[in-house]
Amino acid sequence: MEEEIVESTTNTSRGTRSASNESTEVQSIERRENLSYRDFVQEYLNPMKPVILTDAISEWPAASRWTPEFLKREYGDAVAKLRSGGTVTIGEFIDHVLVSDDDNPAPYLFGFEIEELFPGLTADLQPGLRYAVGDRLSSPFMPARMRAQLNRIVEMLIGGRGGRFPLHYDIYHTHGFVTQVYGDKEFILFSPEDSPFLYSNPESPNRSLVDDLDKPDLDRFPLFAKATPLKATVRAGETIFNPGGWWHSTRMLTPSIAVVQSTVSSSCWSDFVHDLFAWQDATSPLKATAKRAYLRAAGVLMSAAERRLLA
Image (cartoon, rainbow, N blue to C red; front, side):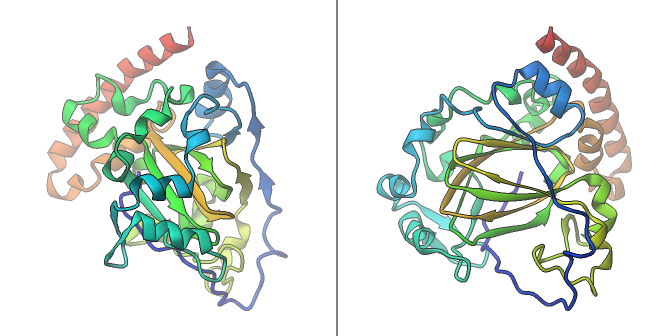
């Protein structure tokens, strides 16, 4: 549920000590094929455990159609806004993506609904991810106004080799299904249990102050050495499930086109409900309390509906 289009960042080592000798060994993320929805719920969704689903989009037309050249040819005149200011046409942006490298990464476009810049392309993402059924953001028990605001269409992410996204967890503790349609991307994840070691930004609590995961400044961030990273490369045609509250950072290994779908389930419902009205606690505490109470009660009804999906 990212809501901006940003420039990518490059590595800048400012530390004098390396994390490699002090941190726990990097762990891998499981990869699964032909996983049933029931097994996904029991083994990953409910336990809040990341997994890479290797065949979740085998029927998507996007898997065989979407390339940087295709986007430039069909939508080259579309205009995107950059967080750093100004605008760029998709054609100009794709030209930058294709020559991007570790030293001169292209901007990273994210957080826009596909129909905004690429009308008609959502049809290429059918059938929908079977692992995202039962999403509470689209439940009829969710108030219509909230459902309209939160149940966003699948979003697209585009970047070039060397582009990075800073360490963060998704707003409202939503789950994220990130699918690589084109290219390869490296993911680094940290469990919510590692939050005390990740130096949350006081102004944006879901973002980390640690700005270089390869060469972290351990003089400035000494506790980071205690964090346990999970690392994996997600390749074209694969989907990574990133549970709500899990910290993650990405690095493009090639030109990359990905889509992300944010969902909510029973396993992240409590944190989602808390976060949704946190801003109202100071301004309208009674309203915040009432809304939370309604959604907690609605969650009981949603759980009953979810159980029927597993029957």
